[in-house]
Length: 449
View 1 (cartoon, rainbow, N blue to C red):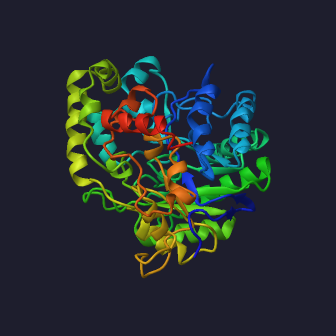
View 2 (view 1 turned 90 degrees about the vertical axis):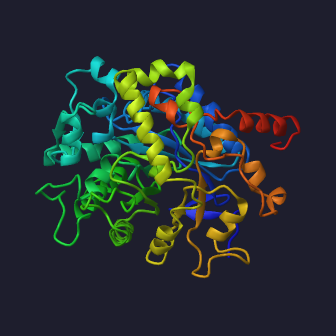
């Protein structure tokens, strides 16, 4: 079986090894300094030997669509052309870089961020259909603010074209591939999800195939990408909504996710990333410890209050976050079973991420080692996300001769102190002192050299 250090090909692009940096929020923005921020964030990962780097969710529309403050937009070819400095830096270290394209739809700031709504009172956010009753109930309670712009068939095609044009700009800037944010409650998941998609046109669900409308949208995006970016490798996340609360009955099952993966691969997608998610934005995508330090940080309180609409609502969100952490605690490779089910049915690379922290886990997912799962490999590439906030040059410890010890482990404690501040637009970085100190010690000792 291949090891983590062995090369692999995605859509004809050679990747030097099977370790990748999963998409994260860089919070780099789009204005002055954005390129410098992205280079500073991503180049060290490529320098450490990681074969594939994903630039995190980048918005394809000129307005709206951002799930958090300071996300990068890639609708402007002039700006995207400047990112050739980033792609060049990654290539100089022998790595490959894909950009993740996204649009938040009903997960965007216009729905949940009080400060954003005050600054953009007339903004209406793209919606696949009329919002589900759960969101309408939260709207009546004043917790969210729904002003949905339900897309016509023509507007859906235009959104697909926006994905395609952004992919073309990225290809011109030297990106090696395109990754679609097909989960984490973004617009693509909303097309796939029977909870959100109740359309009656070609982009709606079908009897026995609740995901059919989403697959049709992914086909339209595929065609637009091919029109504007040629044969650039195209990857998408594929969600199973099995982490949704029990009161949500209309959701994507595991079999729905497997069938979705099969259909998009048949249509021409070059790789898939199966993920277990919820129908709502919750800790199912960042499982781990309740981030006590992040919520208690004095310098973040005004930002939380601005985001959630005052100190009382900020405390309510904090309490909900504590409850969520009890349901979605630390879990190793929580997407492995779904990835294995998909890999058994498709003939393109399957990427697995979510809670992976050790070299030994990476090997097992690839089918290597005495403790590898008896059911066979779960994936072809292995990704880590938050650990790169803690150790941007983590690849130096997980790859090569120094990582032959299967006990090699990332410093990340899954404490989530890095994620909560991002609702204020703060950059993604480790804020846990013990981890920061240990990384500094290792840097002084040349561990990452």
